[in-house]
Length: 186
Image 1: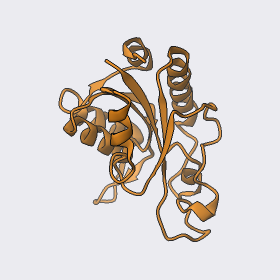
Image 2 (image 1 turned 45 degrees about the vertical axis):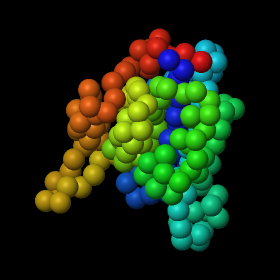
Image 3 (image 1 turned 180 degrees about the horizontal axis):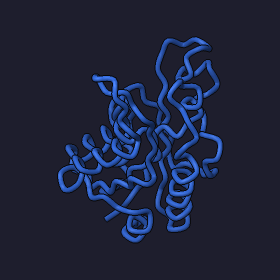
């Protein structure tokens, strides 16, 4: 089954958000970079997704004028098979990604990137609904702690576990980096 790695929103914009910390960054980047390097070595296309939305002002880290909609420092350099910019949570809404995937005969997606429970999870659900097989590599996703409605903190680890729980066997197959690479076919 022809495979494509999707690298979602791994961009400098996040360093300029109040919740950003480096806490999980080293482990995440190690997994993300190993996944990219492994796919490149196997000839599996790697697609880059950026998130950009208004207002188009310098203070908005997700606006094009901010200069932060660019690869995250520490991400391995790679030549993307295609690059798409989205303004919604799903990388498949309004970007042309689904057309590109179909034109290239892609049947399986490996999903990775930032944020685990937002754009990565939403893209996974959407891709599954469109008929793609999805390998979700939790270690190659990143998120941060969030405040719950009652004021308690929900840890990034708990958010990732919750995402894995709701995706497994419904919308995706959970994979390690090694497992995803073992299944990846150009």
